[in-house]
Each structure stands twice: as structure tokens, then as C-alpha cells.
Amino acid sequence: MWYRCVAMCALACLCLGAYAQGEVKWLETEHDFGTFQEVNGKVSCVMRMVNSGDKPLVITRVQSSCGCTATEFTRDEVAPGDTARVTLTYNPKGRPGKFEKDVYVYTTGVPRRSQLSIKGKVIESPLEVDKRYPVAAGALRMENRVVPMGELKRSMRGSNASIAAYNVSPDTIVLFTQGSNAHVEIKALPDTVPPGDVAALLIHYRAKEAPLWGFNVDTLVVSAEPLHESITSQSGLARIYVMAQVLEDFDGMTPEQREKAPALHLTTDKVDCDRITQRQQHAVELHNTGHSDLLVRRVWCPEPAVKAVTVPDKVKKGKRAQVVLEVDPALIEGGMLNTTVTIMTNDPDSPVQQVRVVGLVAK
Image (cartoon, rainbow, N blue to C red; front, side, top):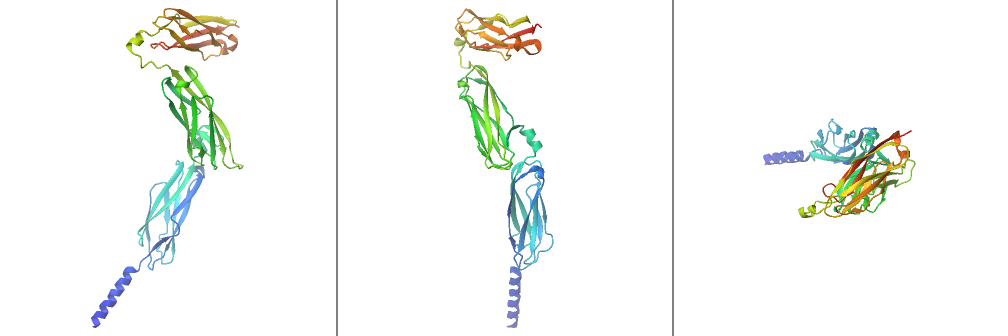
């Protein structure tokens, strides 16, 4: 019977040895750095692990999911009841915005692998913000203030554009938007922007309702107000300029309709004012060589010294009419006039034609 007692004792020792092991118990597995400036450099945190088992353990390695996160850890044996540390350091350089990173810790205890997590939000350095978001409205920075919509047909249901906007302050800001005309809408999404977050200023343009044919410029206003009052609060506003070239849509015309369409012939493509001593007027003749009424949509000039004082609404087929231009030398800068007058009509082949206006102011 003695050999049975020896065998049972040996088995008991083996069982006790199998259950004696190091056990990993983390006092924290997550850390939130909150919002911080990129220029402040690296941020670090320490996470602690206790060996709650009855056998020593060792941290064999620590692996991060990104090269932006450096690690240091206790390399000595951790006796039962002792504490080990893992230090995680995040480098925010060139990494603006939110981040969430995982780190895996491998040990000889149980569990063999543990997951630690860090997160936070990085506010870009002022230099980078100035490059990417040069337009300021208080604490809100925008990537541009001019929105070119390009050429839009009157028949289009609507066109969209957007501007990225960035909150550079440590406080949440609230955005307010308004437009000058009903055909242009602007909306901030979201309208409440936490520190370091990006919002989109969404612009919707309805060409069908635009007030002018041809070139249109509309002014929109964006204002930013801090959610909390403090000495660092920054409120402000900025104007956004939306530009669009609104054109008539001739794409759906049949060959028969084009055959019967009006046709504009300009008797001249240049007005030479020669030496300008006082206000003078010049006529540009419009000749409708087509087969239906020519509708004059708009006549305009970007030069303030030149304006159209007489513009016919339409020119019947085979008939002629005049656009009268007035030149004011008092409004000519630099003493030299060199500009263009744009004439828009419903001529499907040449809906936009231009006349150059030149001259010198006589002293």
C-alpha cells in the first residue's frame, strides 16, 4: 500500500504545481488624453498591472498598433503581489484630429495577452492651421472664402459645394450662417463644433432662381460663438463669396428648333474711345440674322467706368437694335481703358459674345 501513498502525494504535488501561476490584474486599461495642442509635443500615461497570482511572472514584450505610440515597461520579474508598469507615449506631430490606439502586453502569466487603449484629440499647430485654413472667423478657421460654382445651366435643379471649417480653440463653438439671396443656401454640419473638430459649410445653389443671367456673386456670412464665456473665448464672423456663371440650356433643342432659332451678329467687336476728355456714348449694333426673336438676356461690364445705358429687350428676326455704352473718364484708373462688355442672348450657337472697349484719358 505504501506505493499508492507515494503516487497520490506525487499527483497532489503535480496538481498544486499546475495551479500555481502568475495572474495579471490591470488597475487601468484605458486612458483619455483629452484635447491638447500639437505644439505641446508628446504625451504619456502609465498603466499598472498587479500580479495577483501565487507565482512570479514576466512581461515578455509590448506591441503597439502604430509607430506613433512608444512603449516602456517593467522588465524585472514581478513577484506575487508586486506591481509592474507600462508607459505609453503618443507623438502627435503631423497627426491632427482624433486618435484611438491599442497596445498589446504579453506576459508569462494569465492572461498571456492583454489589450490597453489610449485616445485623445490633437489640435493642429498654428503654422499648419494657417496653411490649411487661412480664413478666420474668431476661433473658426476655414479653408477658403471664395466658392466658384462654375458654369450652371438654368435648367439644373441645384448644385452643391462645401468648405471645411476647423475649431482651433479649447472650447466648443456654435456656428450661425445666413445668405443674402434665396437662391443660395448655406448650412453648417454640425453647427456645434467641439475643440479640434472639423465641420462642413454646405452650400446649395439653385441656378433656376438666380437673379441674373451670366456672372452672379452672392455673399454669405458665417459667425462663430464660443459655447462658454472665458478669457480665451473668440467670437467672429467671415464672409463667403459664391460665384456662378448662369447660362441658358440649349442641349435639348432639336435640329429643327436650332434652324428656326435667332442668331446674333455684332457689327463690331471693338469700340475705340480714342482720347477721352468727358463722358461719351458709343452704340453697338445688334443684328438678328436668325428666324425668331432674339432675346437680350443681359449686358454687363466689369469695369465701373463703362455701363450700358440702353439695352433692348429683344430684336425681331431680320431687324437691328443698339446697345448704348457710356464711358466715364472720372472712373478710369491709371488713365487707360481696356475692358470687355459681355452680351448674352438666346442665340444657341453664340449665346455669349464680347465687345472690347479701349481708350486713353486726355489730361
